[in-house]
Amino acid sequence: MNPADDHTDAIVLSAEEYDAVRAALTAGASPRAGGQPPTLNSLLEQWSDIAAELEQEGYSDCAPEFHNSIWCRSALAKVWPLLPLRVRSIRQPELDRIDEQYRQATVPWPSRPEEGAGWWNRRVPRRLEVEASEHREGDWPLGWETTPFPRPAAVEVITWG
Image: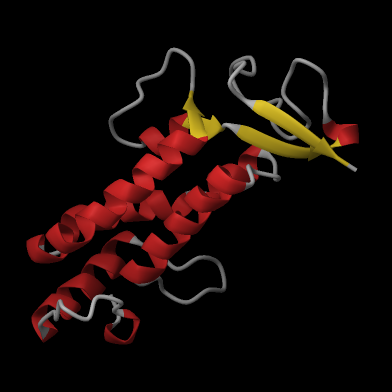
């Protein structure tokens, strides 16, 4: 967490807590290629943004890009146990809300556990937006054909163009 990023006026963290958060981020969340080191706020914001995008619009990139888009949740999973208990307690309701929003906007992989470590990687968007030329009736659109199971009926493919 960066003090300048703190969006919770009523909660003030100590210098030691900020140092512990920075240490946790350094240990558990590497910067993206060419990017700045993430903050706890930036990871939560990215996770919130992808969950909101999935809920409101669906997803318009390919499966490998989807995995890249949700990297922030994997980073949060690595960082979370390293955070001071008070910071986790303060931010847990926010993470839980975003996780639930993501679950509502995605469907689980068939025959895979819906919970446990890395559960977000075993879900696919409920709505995929693709160009008409990439859509194949009744199956995954181009860019998703490597998904290791047939497209569930709950996954809607919306074509444009």
